[in-house]
Amino acid sequence: MINPLISCRTTMYHSPDPGHVKHGSMHAWLRAAAERLSAATGAGRAELELSPGEVDALLALAGTAAHESGARTNAPLTCYLVGVTRGLTGAPLDELVASVAAGAPGELSGDREQEDAEEPS
Image (cartoon, rainbow, N blue to C red; front, side, top):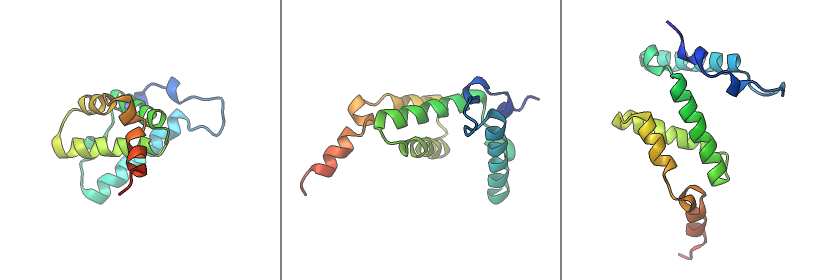
């Protein structure tokens, strides 16, 4: 059986920058993280596998969250929220990603958040 963490698109992860994370080390790190999570929680190891499509969808969502909001910290936090929602509801990842990405530009850009912070109490 092909391990989806290894068979993922390789071109996305190759960079001439030697400090950039390479495909192999990224997936080795993810496999090790999944193994540690499985051991710590009793979750089935196979349930923690990410398919190539899931990896691509989450990386695209992270990119959108970081660029649309202007805050890179929104990338992992948005992916975390999607993961929690998926765990609670069982909703398909592609539907959750689409619902997050479907927000109005002002909502995704953080404009509303800034407006809320500036409103007097």
